Length: 94
Length: 545
Image 1 (cartoon, rainbow over the protein chains, first blue to last red):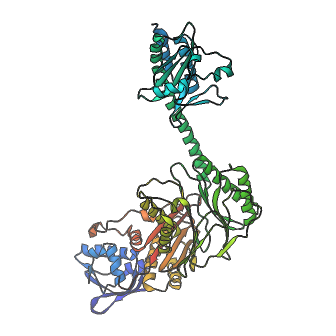
Image 2 (image 1 turned 30 degrees about the vertical axis):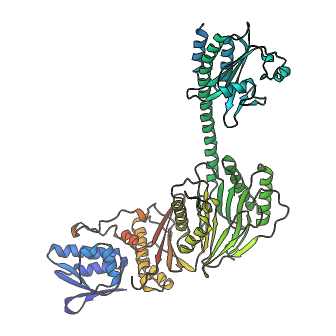
Image 3 (image 1 turned 60 degrees about the horizontal axis):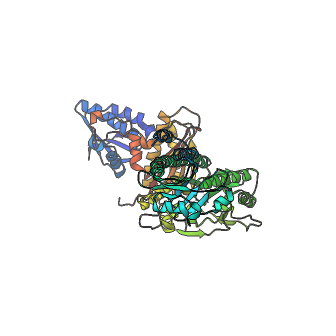
């Protein structure tokens, strides 16, 4: 189960398991956003390379217009995966 | 002096004759050049310090100790000996004349010494047609002898090369036959992890093994024929074939063992035997019954207690002598996690430069430490450790290893080739693995491997199998694709994870994560069955790391 919705103070809250079957939903949601987007990952339990691909595509799109994707409340699982993939160099992680 | 016969001879002696032809040429040349009635060539054998005269291929050669008689003295002193009246010389042995009826009047014995100064033999020239041999004959004989020595030496060397080559080819053929009897692929047996491997020494050794599913159960064999060379390679090949035949004909373990033993005892040379473990495992009851003819120690690792059982031989080696009665088979039951290890002498007795042997203790320690690995990995690690121990010392004997492990409980499920099946896969792992952290890593690896198959594999109606086995400290998982392209995830191209954003792609990242997360990854592909199998292990991680 995965949910993505706007949270308090203009953040986007993503929660649950972000696997390959969820890509279309998340991509569609993120495609509507612009500028600096803060993604609250506190309740993101799981992410695979398919999910990372969605975040990568979004980051490229946002940066082309001066925006970017910030990841907050990154848990250990997500931090490991970001580090293994070198994506910790690509996103602002807080 | 008439040079022509000698020069003609020099030309002839340069030809690549075989040894009998070359000897005949030398004898013919000596009689003609020296005007003698007869001549003979005694070849020197340094190992026995003897001179050998080959009269004809079907007559046993005459042997003479160096130093004895005129020929022997010539060999020892390496000087020409000219005897004008043989019967007046105490060194002369008249018994040969008595046997042949030929009367030797005078003789000339010439040492045959090659370029390097080594003694090749002695040429004996008998009965000068007119008078006796004089100083001129001695000088001519020395020139002739030098020529002959070199020609003979060259012929002997060539003969050795040819024989060596012939032996090498025979050996290669026997080896190829020996190798061809080994199982082409490991049998797949539910609840078991099976692996056998055979590493031949350069030329020698007579090991074999077998792992085969028969109607009577899983056949487990390790054999080691005595001796080195072609014989043992052929002996174990025969044993292998007889045993499979006996079982195919419906024989039980006792009958099969006894009849193979008795057949081999009859066929093999008296000094040959084969140490052999022959067992049948019932995959339903997990009871292994076996006879071990001189093969020991048989090792069984008990997973529950962490201890070892060692079994001595149950009977004398196969083919040592006929068997009238056979004691009942030894019987043992494999509990979940138990591991049976059959290890050939070549491993136990592998020596390093200091003369120390690898030994049973090291084998046991490594297996106990790595009993959680797949049997293929464990075998690779053990052989690697043995070679590291030998530290460059040549492998003196075949090394053979058969590992049979009863898996700890686990579960197996099959899934359709579509991304939506991920939810079912995750439900399966949730049932099987209770630790959240381990399950998250397992899910990720499975998702990456599975989506890869769905995206890049064949469009097929066959199901993808996922088998999860618990280990003492983690899981071992096997993903099987029964309709696969040959693609090794361990060798997939690596993405550049340090590249800047604009050059980063999501492709290749999944398998990169897989390699980062697994503790071991093994890939097998069978082109005949078009089947791919990926096995990986994940260990539990301590809370602090």
